[in-house]
Image (cartoon, rainbow, N blue to C red):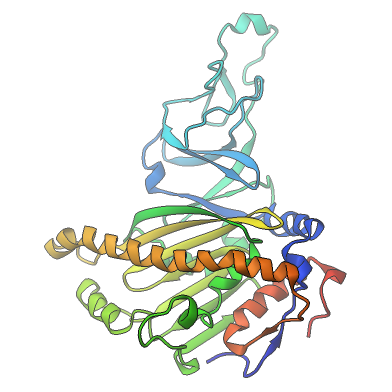
Length: 369
């Protein structure tokens, strides 16, 4: 059941969805010191494998060195070039693409071409900037802050255990999507936290609002969780799960780890959805789509696995695409609205999220109830 029985106030002022100063405050307070999923173990499966990305305007390189995952600023200590512009690849050593400076596994200068022209030199005198990197399940996380809570401490044990189970080795990555939105980062997050929009945005024959009796909402300080015993795809999903899993649970679980990490699971799939701020009215979603590999790895699983993976990928992307299409309209309305806004009990996870964000805004939001 839901925790509330009636309507709730819209906690955040509409200014919080487009004001540059408030945006900067959120980035500083909610994101700068946090942990962000950036890759999967499979994408860094061999020593020397690397991926690069922009994370909160920082160029980041994440690398497997002998089984240890490390993260660095993707900037050479020599004359500031990006070490590489490749989004992923393999290299036996960290080497700058422009002048060939090489770095060891810790990011310390190892080989400098024409080193005598840089005399005097001391061993390991120059170093790449390091970031913290940790893994949880099949996900690789990076924090741009040199100090602070560990990944598990930051998430809390309940959320960490959920992610570890949902992204275990029993799940195979089938696709990764990146999509930029003309919307504040909170808009796609809030859209993912409520089912009220489903019959309208994801219209299908016979689709209606789920029953409160079928859903359990957990409202925590650092996360919220939905457990629904009637999965979105209904009978079809149950039949497939019964064929694929020895003991299917026949439920849909949806975790939101504050501020921006969303993990949704069924017996057949896991979706990891992270939303990053790009500006006051711009954001980026990165989604990792996994399919369950099947228990026992028998002939059926080996034969049907690729087909299941394709079904999961197409179904998941269809849902995401339908959501993404409405986000600019929500953003435009937020910028123009003179309404106070109201949240229904079905949307109470949005209310809990807004209360979390409101803590960094002080007088910029109305008083909490």
